[in-house]
Length: 159
Image (cartoon, rainbow, N blue to C red):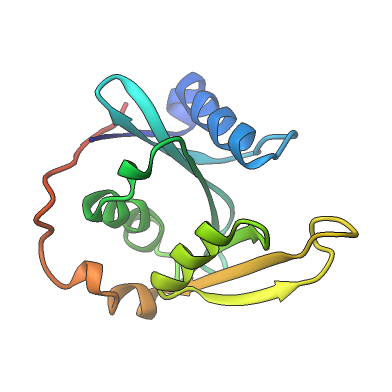
């Protein structure tokens, strides 16, 4: 697996990752003012994460992710995905918004230590949204951070 980071200095690549994520999670309008992380298996993008709605004064950022393969969520990728908001940006809280119908993602978020808040009708009159929050303390104490992963190295590339 390879990770490729994008942002304003790599706008075209950033937009490609943003479109990938938006189209897979049903956000037609896309994202504004964001950075992204793409996960490649060989030369095929299999997943992406978009970092958006950053509030530096409160240390909060939102992450939206999508994947076409279950293979992307390795320990090294997870560490990289959360290192950006917590270590690089200095965030104290990460927010993840998930449809109540996406039970797989809800289970994953719960396993990672996110706290869940169900908001009825937030996705329309017939669908609730779960607002998941992950504090830096919960992230730091998660078992994925306890020791080096045995499932291989991830090579991060930037522009």
